[in-house]
Image 1 (cartoon, rainbow, N blue to C red):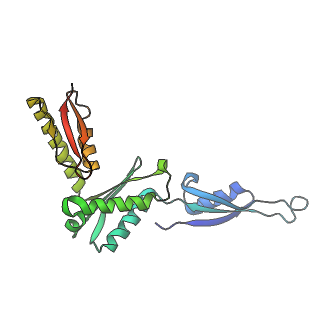
Image 2 (image 1 turned 90 degrees about the horizontal axis):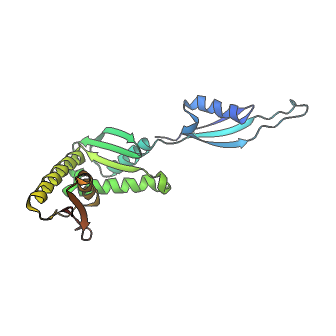
Length: 211
């Protein structure tokens, strides 16, 4: 999304800002305002009066900024794609991609997709303060969603096994996002506890009976 900027004059700063907002079709919280010239009163209150001049710039919406970054990366990779879904919700931008080269984009065990998401996230947040950072989730034809549902189902089955056998279960090595899914789906279970062990990239989740 291209940044939109307008400069407007008015008898007062507020009047100039209002004219700019009307021109852009947005609200004050959607823009950044720079006062270029304060209004001045001339001789006798009217001769040589000088109006206020402001520059008003629309803030780029997080989801549109994310789309632009992801599309740029995919174009550089020469991926045949289209954005199927773009959602901004509570600090998280979710982008779901579809197309003819999705196997190539996903890569082995999702490694390429994870790399695209990581790089795009770095670009989007490079000028943001920690508290303003955006979490980006890039998915391909609901690949992550299906994988998440499969992992949740596996975690529940393994927790049942732990309860039945009274023995710990050590899951396969997983990345931090996959481990978070397991911890989350089992955190409300009153009978089991989960924790991570080992070093990256071989860090694993252990499911154990609560003592």
